[in-house]
Image (cartoon, rainbow, N blue to C red):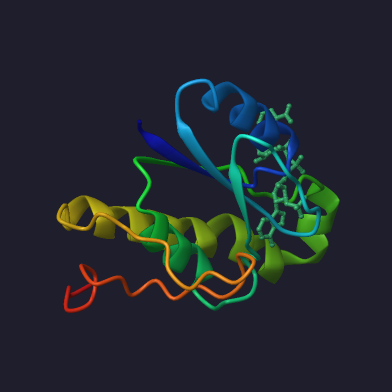
Length: 135
Ligand SMILES: NC(=O)c1ccc[n+]([C@@H]2O[C@H](COP(=O)([O-])OP(=O)(O)OC[C@H]3O[C@@H](n4cnc5c(N)ncnc54)[C@H](OP(=O)(O)O)[C@@H]3O)[C@@H](O)[C@H]2O)c1
């Protein structure tokens, strides 16, 4: 079964995607401030503003077939007033996510294994087939 990681699964678009994808995919999703549970899926806490490269770590750990990023600040006025945070969430994090996906595409031997996950917060993503692979 193919797998999908939905970043921003606790949001309006993300939660709808979880329901749709759960019919025929193995679904992983993330939440940030609003913990969200879906009986058919596995959830992970992810704060794209934490600058710990955690989105890349999660993507590499799960090695999903598909990644969908719906994480966003919806309030345009808030983005205007908090330009750096908006830039981090909408631009820098998106680049980080794309870079992690590219890493998986160019390293097809990586199967991904979720190891040492502590409530979705502490990810030890260095699985045996990733160790030694150059980024
Ligand atoms: N809703 C629509 O009708 C619609 C239509 C077309 C396009 N869009 C676009 O689709 C995207 C998502 O829209 P939406 O309506 O689903 O928004 P939403 O309900 O506000 O959801 C936003 C998602 O982003 C997550 N998020 C926010 N800050 C985060 C952070 N620092 N780190 C990680 N995740 C974070 C939220 O997680 P938490 O809630 O857990 O904090 C939530 O899951 C936006 O770009 C929007 O413009 C929406």
